[in-house]
Length: 516
Image (spheres, rainbow, N blue to C red):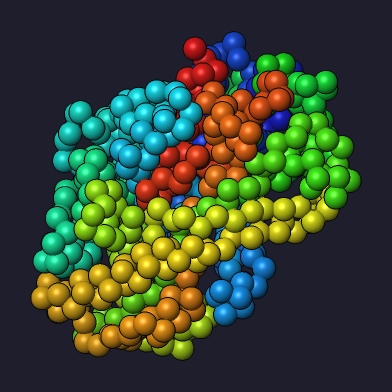
């Protein structure tokens, strides 16, 4: 089957969609279902046909550099001078083609909060749930009110999970965290729980958003997909976006959009493209010599990500081979008794998950239970070093800037150790390798040496109506006509859990707006 539609020229399009990730694939695919709408989809990466992408058991990591763009933070004194690396998907399907395949829709409170922030009920949980019902082809315990069937995205609990994963769910139940059949649905309408993870895996193969929304349309004359096309800037005439400049095959090209331009290049590249187009903080743009188009100081601000600590590490008495995506069980739970929503999401990782600080503690067949925070208070910022599109992006994350985030991660670590040492998990623990019964300063040092990115960068072109927001509730860039954004950058607050599914939902919302 063809993986993309080739093109010899780039003219005559109604919409230009930049980025084929979890939201961009949705927008382009939904628009192209109308044969009278001409859509161009630009993707900086290549095809998604390699076994390192297709096989769920061998999802790619940084040893496949062609599939990723790397973003590195400056050395952080709060982390002992460590510099953290974050990766963005650079392949057809974007992050959905290279991530851990976890389908986490977020919590009811996330979306009701978005509706309050934007004043738009279309972002509230009830409306969002209707979108998810349309998106999903659910293959788990039936729940017609909360899970959709027949949609473009194949979702199911991890098939035949490792006994280590089922033991983790039982261990969580043993310490008071209720077990659920589905880690979305009712579990994410209350305080949380533990469950085998929902995955976008079908018959051992990854089911990316390119699989769901683009490949079924291969051969349609009104959809053109160009891979290897790096977008440099949006072309703005007066106050309207009229096209984009991009590079492909060593040539620089300009393509016009008769209706609208859509940026779906993610929380790093979308603000970069906006700033290179003259849309951002006026002082920052003057510093790098980019003419101002629209003063939006929120571009690149409000950077937020989930922190994942590497790791609580255990050696089993006998090897326990990983299955599926090697990360089949998780739990969501509040860090305090007075919270009624979860702010922690540790994940069982069936192989060692370590930073360079702890790499020497790994042994063959060890497994990890990684503490994590999913409602962080810490915020950072992205900045351009120059007007060169290939220059390094300065990433200021500050993952532990807020003391409460440290508290939550400390509590998550204690809970992970308690679950790992529960009777249900005893058959899988010969010894604890990290961190041991640490407290106080030792626990703090463990967290700072182990904090990593969950890979959920968000918020850098956030949606809202105040003077620090970048897009309005209809995802239109403030002050620039015919330009919209649909990706994790628009999130007013980061969702509770992995961010792929919410990005698909955001893409569906924009498709609604553009086709209604």
